[in-house]
Length: 88
Image 1 (cartoon, rainbow, N blue to C red):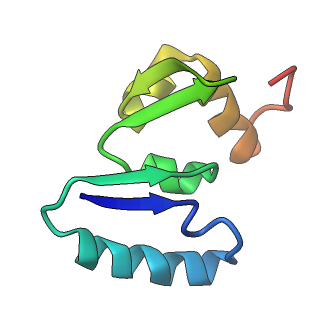
Image 2 (image 1 turned 60 degrees about the vertical axis):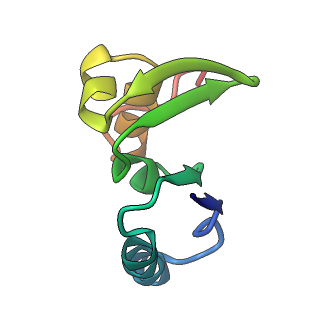
């Protein structure tokens, strides 16, 4: 098991890409748990678990969560500039 806790939190996008490439090689076929606030990191995962105030509020793949149009989808649209944040 490989656990990465905010591994790219303080990095610029170019450095984040390099770290992601390295962790992809390192993870191989291991179970990898990634704790992240960056949606670009979450979007790469096989499964995303969305938490709010210590509770799981959504879980699924990136595409499933976008289709559910819940909290994750609102955050994603805000991130890509499609929506203004509204009480998120």
